[in-house]
Image 1 (cartoon, helix red, strand yellow):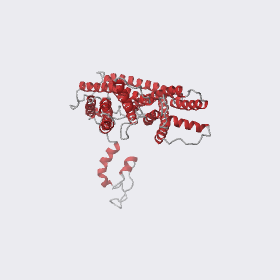
Image 2 (tube, one colour; image 1 turned 30 degrees about the horizontal axis):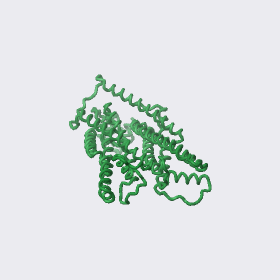
Image 3 (cartoon, one colour; image 1 turned 60 degrees about the vertical axis):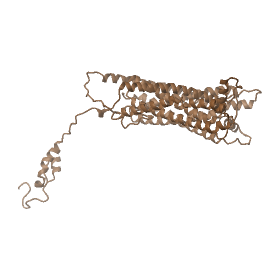
Image 4 (cartoon, one colour; image 1 turned 90 degrees about the vertical axis):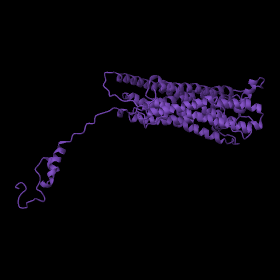
Length: 487
């Protein structure tokens, strides 16, 4: 890839600086909201004396006080808390990527292109979360701020509080639009770089260019087998990731609504009602010994949304690289395997906790028919039907093993194949070269010959050779009565 132009460097520097600034501000705000939600101190009984006090009390009771009960509202304190965790994680990643990208740009390091891809994906996710939160807040604004009978003070406080949170969530609308513009600009830079890389690759494939013949390692697996394995892993990640993302999103929305359905009549309605009551109804009166309560179930759903999103992105990137025969296959194989192992580990923990609840709590407090028809289906879905779970672990193991084989002795040895991979590591050491010894200087040649007689001459040879002047009178001549040149 050729060097960046001055305009491109300035745009990348501005985009990275914006990422650091916005990421730090939203990181701190989300952290404060998480802490306030976890503390959940009751509201003070003092009457607010200023408009700012009214605003703070209403904002705290509306979005941060977990005991607040508001009907027919999507963004309640629990949902707002989940959004804050998502912002906390994404903005942490945004800050790290922006700092690393800014450093690589200042060093003129070609690896900035790989970091830029991850920066763009992370910024797209943050912009999408902003857009989703703004829409949900807008829906709640119409439902909660204008109720009958009308209360002017309540309408004013609700409007000012909800609209303020909506504007902050949209990053003032201007910053959100700027982020989208930078996403488009950086996509153009990545696309141009990709076109140039393809052009260079086609040029290097020219048979007229002389090149050394490199022997292939006998430990490498068959290329067709690797491509088949990579495509299978990618399709598994895309299908399962999208399915679990949709299911987790629906569970979070149902948890936010917090309204029991009508009394069930059919078997399907009874099943839906029980699942909703045991896992999604936050006011459910469950025994204290139950582990997976609706709040804990919501935390697992948030984890599944984040992990499934990353899984789908990694699978799509891997599929694209396999299609284009890119050089990033070992790193993407390793990334996909690590993500799959992590998801399988979360599945295992979830299934174990559900099994403990089924054996110790459900059968003890409720009937066997209720437990079997409610807990067992959820447990089977959490275990991905058990068969898919074992398939995921096996494919992840095979993918990780192939990545290790491809990285041994290749251009990716001793590189970090994690969140920020090093794609463009130099491969010059693989090309055989002839080492030409350095020729000694004239001074070194003369000094090597003359220095053999140094004890005889007993003069300062360095001075004589450097200045090309007659040597000075020796300090300890052989004949004290004769001059030096008369001997």
